[in-house]
Structure formats: structure tokens, C-alpha cells
Length: 136
Image (cartoon, rainbow, N blue to C red; front, side):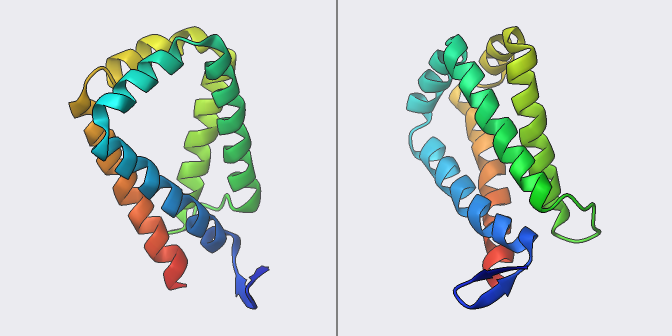
């Protein structure tokens, strides 16, 4: 267990404390600026450098999460493992088959409605992780 400000935290709690607020901030930004993010995503997925670098970042973040906590428990902590696996898979796809990224992202995020739905999901997951992480 890690020590933070004199308290002990299991890895899942620490990850939830980090990932939850980041997810909330990302979702809030998308919900408040949907048109901006639609344009930014479409532009980003057509840049091979950004696709590759985001793949490296996603793979690194996912592996960091899974190295700290990868258990498939029957409680809230399974969400931490799922987030880790989603990041690993997303990173591998961006690195290994980058030509799939632009058409997929363009289809999914081509309008504010689809992006808003995604943002709400990210907001709920972020809120849940933040609650669980800071309640511990």
C-alpha cells in the first residue's frame, strides 16, 4: 500500500483518485465545448504523429494502471481494471493499426450528439471513481 499524506491507500484507490477527476475534467470540457472537441478530434485523428503519440501515451497509462491494479474483483475496483484494459487496447490499436483510427473516430465523433453521449459516460465513470477514491 502506498502512503499519501500520512494515510495508506491500496493501488485501486490511488488510481481512482487520479483518473476520476481527470475524466470529470475531460467530460466537462467536452460537454461545455462540444463543437471545439469535434473539430479537435477530427483534426487529431488525421495526424499520424498525434495518433502514434496518443497510442504511446494510452498504452503507457493503461500498463501503469494494470501494473498497479489488475484484479477482477466483484466490487467497484473492477472499474479500475477495465479502464486500464481499455487504455491498453486503445494504445495498441493506435500503434499497430493506425489506419483504423481516423475512420473509426470520424464515425463515432462526427457530431456533437455522439460526442456528448461519450462525454456523459466518461463523466459518470469519472464521478464514480472520484467518489470511491476519495471516500476511502
